[in-house]
Image (cartoon, rainbow, N blue to C red; front, side):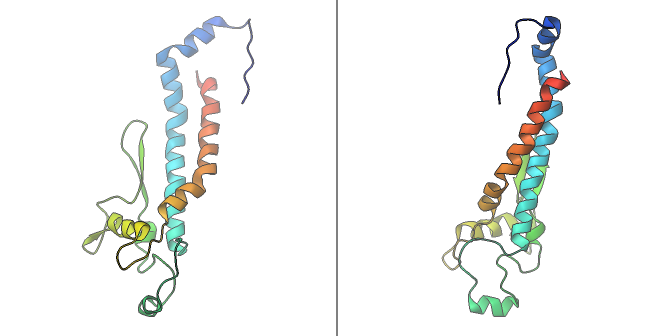
Length: 155
Protein backbone atom coordinates (compact mmCIF):
# COMPACT_ATOMS: atom_id res chain seq x y z
CA UNK A 1 0.00 0.00 0.00
CA UNK A 2 1.35 3.43 -0.81
CA UNK A 3 0.38 6.89 0.34
CA UNK A 4 0.68 10.23 -1.37
CA UNK A 5 1.35 13.31 0.67
CA UNK A 6 -0.22 16.54 -0.57
CA UNK A 7 0.57 19.93 0.85
CA UNK A 8 -2.76 21.37 -0.29
CA UNK A 9 -6.26 20.15 0.26
CA UNK A 10 -9.37 20.45 2.34
CA UNK A 11 -7.88 20.93 5.80
CA UNK A 12 -11.30 21.20 7.42
CA UNK A 13 -12.23 17.78 6.05
CA UNK A 14 -8.90 16.33 7.21
CA UNK A 15 -9.39 17.79 10.69
CA UNK A 16 -12.94 16.43 10.97
CA UNK A 17 -11.85 13.03 9.69
CA UNK A 18 -9.19 12.61 12.32
CA UNK A 19 -11.34 13.70 15.24
CA UNK A 20 -11.72 10.64 17.48
CA UNK A 21 -15.52 10.60 17.31
CA UNK A 22 -15.65 10.62 13.48
CA UNK A 23 -12.76 8.21 13.07
CA UNK A 24 -14.19 5.74 15.60
CA UNK A 25 -17.60 5.83 13.89
CA UNK A 26 -16.01 5.17 10.50
CA UNK A 27 -13.88 2.32 11.82
CA UNK A 28 -16.83 0.66 13.53
CA UNK A 29 -19.05 1.07 10.47
CA UNK A 30 -16.45 -0.45 8.15
CA UNK A 31 -14.74 -3.03 10.31
CA UNK A 32 -17.41 -4.61 12.53
CA UNK A 33 -19.28 -6.20 9.59
CA UNK A 34 -15.91 -7.28 8.19
CA UNK A 35 -14.96 -8.91 11.51
CA UNK A 36 -18.24 -10.81 11.49
CA UNK A 37 -17.76 -11.86 7.86
CA UNK A 38 -14.22 -13.04 8.61
CA UNK A 39 -15.38 -14.98 11.68
CA UNK A 40 -18.14 -16.61 9.63
CA UNK A 41 -15.64 -17.59 6.94
CA UNK A 42 -13.56 -19.42 9.52
CA UNK A 43 -16.56 -21.13 11.18
CA UNK A 44 -17.89 -22.30 7.81
CA UNK A 45 -14.45 -23.63 6.89
CA UNK A 46 -14.25 -25.59 10.17
CA UNK A 47 -17.70 -27.11 9.58
CA UNK A 48 -16.89 -28.01 5.95
CA UNK A 49 -13.61 -29.63 6.95
CA UNK A 50 -15.33 -31.70 9.66
CA UNK A 51 -18.13 -32.87 7.34
CA UNK A 52 -15.71 -33.82 4.58
CA UNK A 53 -13.68 -35.91 7.01
CA UNK A 54 -10.73 -33.71 6.11
CA UNK A 55 -9.04 -33.71 9.50
CA UNK A 56 -5.30 -34.18 9.45
CA UNK A 57 -3.74 -37.20 11.06
CA UNK A 58 -3.80 -40.94 10.53
CA UNK A 59 -6.74 -42.79 9.00
CA UNK A 60 -9.33 -44.34 11.27
CA UNK A 61 -8.72 -47.81 12.68
CA UNK A 62 -10.42 -50.64 10.81
CA UNK A 63 -12.56 -51.42 13.87
CA UNK A 64 -13.77 -47.78 13.93
CA UNK A 65 -14.62 -47.86 10.22
CA UNK A 66 -16.61 -51.08 10.67
CA UNK A 67 -18.48 -49.62 13.69
CA UNK A 68 -19.26 -46.31 11.93
CA UNK A 69 -19.90 -47.73 8.47
CA UNK A 70 -17.59 -45.17 6.78
CA UNK A 71 -14.06 -43.83 6.99
CA UNK A 72 -14.70 -40.11 7.45
CA UNK A 73 -12.80 -38.78 10.43
CA UNK A 74 -14.83 -36.70 12.94
CA UNK A 75 -18.18 -37.69 11.40
CA UNK A 76 -20.59 -39.98 13.22
CA UNK A 77 -23.97 -38.22 13.36
CA UNK A 78 -23.06 -35.01 11.52
CA UNK A 79 -23.77 -32.85 14.59
CA UNK A 80 -20.12 -31.86 15.03
CA UNK A 81 -20.03 -30.66 11.41
CA UNK A 82 -22.56 -27.96 12.30
CA UNK A 83 -21.07 -27.05 15.65
CA UNK A 84 -18.67 -24.22 14.75
CA UNK A 85 -20.49 -20.96 15.43
CA UNK A 86 -19.91 -17.22 15.43
CA UNK A 87 -21.08 -15.31 18.47
CA UNK A 88 -20.77 -11.59 19.05
CA UNK A 89 -19.18 -11.02 22.44
CA UNK A 90 -18.64 -7.28 22.38
CA UNK A 91 -19.03 -4.19 20.22
CA UNK A 92 -16.41 -5.36 17.77
CA UNK A 93 -15.44 -8.81 19.03
CA UNK A 94 -16.61 -12.17 17.77
CA UNK A 95 -16.09 -15.71 19.07
CA UNK A 96 -15.49 -18.32 16.38
CA UNK A 97 -15.40 -21.94 17.43
CA UNK A 98 -17.33 -24.70 19.14
CA UNK A 99 -19.30 -23.20 22.05
CA UNK A 100 -19.10 -25.09 25.35
CA UNK A 101 -22.88 -25.15 25.73
CA UNK A 102 -23.40 -27.33 22.64
CA UNK A 103 -23.79 -30.93 23.74
CA UNK A 104 -23.58 -34.28 22.01
CA UNK A 105 -25.25 -36.59 24.48
CA UNK A 106 -23.71 -35.69 27.84
CA UNK A 107 -20.42 -34.45 26.42
CA UNK A 108 -19.77 -30.88 25.27
CA UNK A 109 -18.90 -30.72 21.57
CA UNK A 110 -16.01 -28.40 22.47
CA UNK A 111 -14.57 -31.28 24.51
CA UNK A 112 -15.04 -33.70 21.61
CA UNK A 113 -13.21 -31.42 19.20
CA UNK A 114 -10.43 -30.85 21.75
CA UNK A 115 -9.95 -34.63 22.02
CA UNK A 116 -9.70 -34.81 18.24
CA UNK A 117 -7.41 -31.78 17.93
CA UNK A 118 -4.95 -32.86 20.60
CA UNK A 119 -5.54 -36.61 20.79
CA UNK A 120 -5.98 -38.78 23.86
CA UNK A 121 -4.34 -41.97 25.12
CA UNK A 122 -6.47 -43.93 22.62
CA UNK A 123 -7.11 -41.40 19.82
CA UNK A 124 -4.29 -39.92 17.74
CA UNK A 125 -4.44 -36.15 17.10
CA UNK A 126 -6.63 -35.26 14.13
CA UNK A 127 -6.51 -31.46 14.00
CA UNK A 128 -9.23 -29.66 12.09
CA UNK A 129 -9.72 -26.27 13.79
CA UNK A 130 -6.19 -24.84 13.49
CA UNK A 131 -5.76 -26.07 9.90
CA UNK A 132 -9.12 -24.48 9.03
CA UNK A 133 -7.98 -21.17 10.54
CA UNK A 134 -4.69 -21.36 8.63
CA UNK A 135 -6.49 -22.13 5.35
CA UNK A 136 -8.84 -19.17 5.91
CA UNK A 137 -6.04 -16.65 6.51
CA UNK A 138 -5.77 -15.30 2.96
CA UNK A 139 -9.53 -14.83 2.61
CA UNK A 140 -9.79 -13.20 6.06
CA UNK A 141 -6.98 -10.75 5.20
CA UNK A 142 -8.78 -9.92 1.96
CA UNK A 143 -12.09 -9.20 3.74
CA UNK A 144 -10.43 -7.04 6.40
CA UNK A 145 -8.24 -5.25 3.86
CA UNK A 146 -11.25 -4.28 1.73
CA UNK A 147 -13.06 -2.97 4.79
CA UNK A 148 -10.04 -0.96 5.93
CA UNK A 149 -9.82 0.72 2.53
CA UNK A 150 -13.41 1.98 2.89
CA UNK A 151 -12.78 3.81 6.17
CA UNK A 152 -11.56 7.05 4.58
CA UNK A 153 -14.68 7.22 2.41
CA UNK A 154 -16.85 6.94 5.50
CA UNK A 155 -15.42 9.96 7.34
